[in-house]
Length: 231
Length: 227
Image (cartoon, rainbow over all chains, first blue to last red):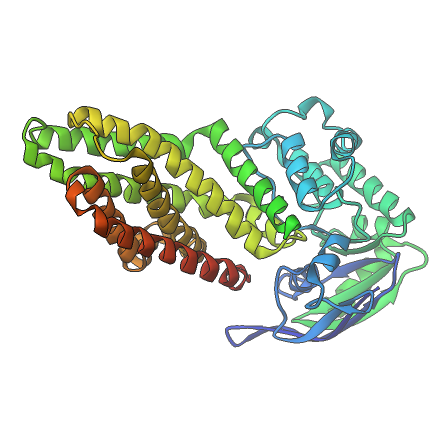
């Protein structure tokens, strides 16, 4: 379970987040929506341990994130705007490196299995610098899940992906959802969000303006709510 | 502690492997060092005995300036694709990033020294008669002190737009004690062997500096990793 308690973030007198209180239950898939500059990515960065809040705190499984930080980080898989991959290394080398940092068991087998799962088996030993945006994004999501995290944080994962790559990504997200992984996803793509998310949080100017569940998975209804609230 | 060392070694392996593949930093450092040695060998007459007095200084000029080229790249290379953030969100102690980077920078500098110092001796027609083990110890301690401070300050300056200019400016004042001690020790070993008694005070100074700054940088590193 993830719980943020009066989360505030101020950078150079500019308020990025203002009293954010979210509770995410184990196994929930949440889409965080909102215009640019709403503070969506900042929430993910704070939960992922990349940024510290100015005020307030995050609890993961009832443990404050600042305490026992390393144990909490092991539970989180973070996919950000950038891939975090090393361009001179191949997919196998990149994933082996991150797998070592996360102390993954049976690493060699797992790395190859995951690379096959995202359809990059023919490029296993090619340096990442020669990859297209879609291939890098597929590898980046594998990097985020190499250690089987129980919480998956995805920051605009569909950006720049073609149809096939989007489908592979959605399949991976749905598979993780079946395994009761908690997923927090920031996206501008409402069609992709409706396909994978159960609950939606709307944000504007650092504040949560709506938090709702859409039972019928209707993208038009989601778009209508979004436009009505965000404008 | 075991996990910290394992993560640090993984980072060192990754850096050295990437370097082995690209040879970007190593070749730049070697070309720079080679140019300095060749230029000085033409500028001074190697047959003149007094010229030997510049050798200790040249060893450390090459080490420091070539080392700065490597230190600059060490954290800038982590900025492509925000790879450093990938390390920050990993379940590793931030100090292991420092330790891993320190080891990889140190190994690269030692490799550069292994090639450039014999070249310097050949081009200056210098035959070493002093204690080689003590000379290696001085190189080891001097380079370690320079790299441990340099790695820390390279991480600190990496977020600056003009990091390549900033690093030397903030690094030189801090490393001046170790540079003075290293040059003096090298001078005693290579030229003024009769002053050998004072060598041990310089070596003690270098060992103390290394220990103090390594511990200081190791524990403070997590504060400069905050985004």
